[in-house]
Image (cartoon, rainbow, N blue to C red; front, side):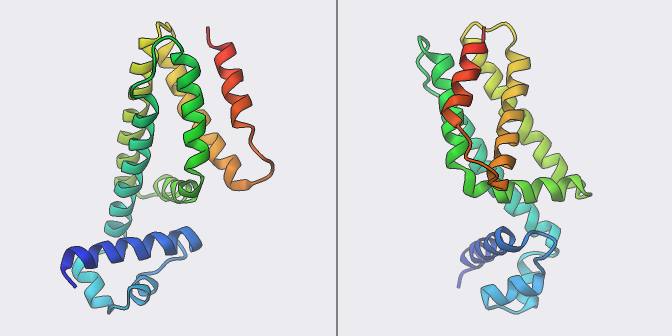
Length: 182
């Protein structure tokens, strides 16, 4: 295998293991075994678990960033509020599979991985600023406040979706936001 393919295999296997077991319960030995390589080969590509988690976080955050950008690009200005909220709600429903990884990465950052925390802070600021700029296009004066609220709603709904306590009425949530958005 070429080194690039090996790195991709390591990232894919690690992502699967973390999605099943969490970051804390996934060891480098587990990863090496899943990829069918020695720990020495794993260390050749990643000098630490934190380096590996950093690459996985970059991959994950790029996917979510792309989803946020896709939500707001090309929204028709006549129905932009309705479209934007509905698209965001649809994307939340669609990324439910990534929600578990998102929560694991957030927990890792919050509980002491400072470099990961910085990566996530940058992505959140990018997401919020992207939403804010699109909200401003609709003529809404409170674009900054609404952009913070939308990011918080996304995180909250991802947590609720992971808990699976009840079916989330995404369309009703979107309609509520649109009717209260003045």
